[in-house]
Image (tube, rainbow, N blue to C red; front, side, top):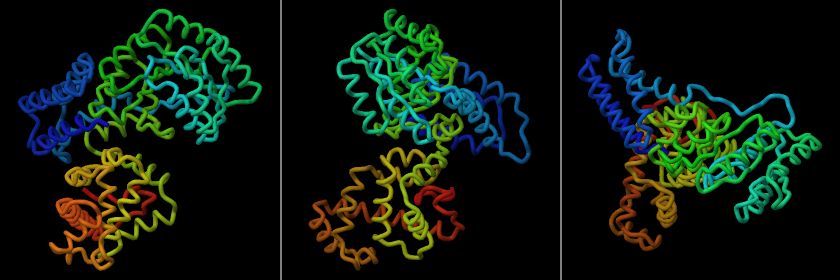
Amino acid sequence: MFDKLTEKFEAVFRSLRGLGKITDENINCTIREVRVNLLEADVSYSVVKKFIENVKQKAEGTKVLRSIKPGEQFIKIIYDELVELLGRTVVPIISEKAKPKIILLIGLQGSGKTTTSVKLALHLKKKGFSCLLVAADVYRPAAIEQLETLGKQSGVPVFSKGKSDPVIICKESVGEAVAKNIDYLILDTAGRLHVDGEMMEEIQLIQDTVHPHETLFVVDGMTGQDAVNSAKIFSETLSLTGTILTKMEGDSRGGAAVSVTDITGVPIKFIGVSEKLDGLEVFDPKRITDRILGMGDVVALVEKAQKSFSEDEKNGIQNLFLKKNFDMNDFLTQFQQLKKMGPLNQIVGMLPGMNRKVLKKMNLNDKKMIWAEAIIQSMTLQEREYPRIINGSRRKRIAYGSGRTVLEVNQLLKDYFQIQKMMKQMSKKSFPSIGKLGSHFMTVN
């Protein structure tokens, strides 16, 4: 998520940090780079134009503070403006006392509404709220069955009336939710392959009938400018309270996320970060800005670690940093713990600064982690404890035993020594508990 945009901004910031002073020349040079970066990331032209004008105006009117380097001050201007563009603050889902609180999900076909409705229900359920899903998509083949299956997997009940009128289904679901004292009623409505009057009219009828507290537009983030354009049309036609960007784990550009709030005038409330039912995150403009600008997302990393590890595992990970000798057994433990936290590309994207660069340089991915485990498990106990004894003949034997190549064994050993060096640096620093930090790959920049 945001990989390409992050790499571009990191390059810009490297040049900015060396600035002795802010001048018209370096302002214009930086502005040009930022403009190109945003446009290449598929950010809307009108949004880029507005963003650039604001950054330039603030940079030109900046009084350089003695305590802050000029380049760092310029970076802060870009950071603040991007936070503003993304919505400034977290806008939570409706939480008033009314029961049920009705959430209407709308969008084009293929945007992921059905899966998102279940993810949202599961998110609310984990917070202690009761939810009822409503199967109001009566047109797409197997849509009702899909919702019922996912509802069963997540333990959330589904209200269904088969292929009857969607407006009547939604109306009757309200009565059902009242009778069962449900906290949140989530309406999964039909989409179309493109925006059309019939779909808009049906959604408008549902809005007028059940008066939802939230109308959230679900949009596929991978479609870039198409996502922004459809969001604009929906926001102009219907009364929206927010958007949910789906499939963001597959979008390396991030243009939709940067554009959609400014275009629609409503906040992004959630983003889909994986295909799993728990792969829905509250949208936090500051944390997303940190990710985009290459500063990582430590908070999200902490949350993942807390969900993935037991207390004993957290203590075990922390103890790795207290060891003077970080061996191959510890390296294997790290691989196994990383796998628990989810797809590696997501974890790496949350790391700040040098840590992310080290892991990217190692070219770690989920497949590589599988064969790395096989290589380590083919080593003798002595080789795991003292990797430096692994000479050419030992490498051939390990390669044969693991079904990998000698080249791959060599690469793994190289990666190990890089990580070992990181661990030695960290052992010299005071290290907080894993519950606070969240990752055994985190280090001080």
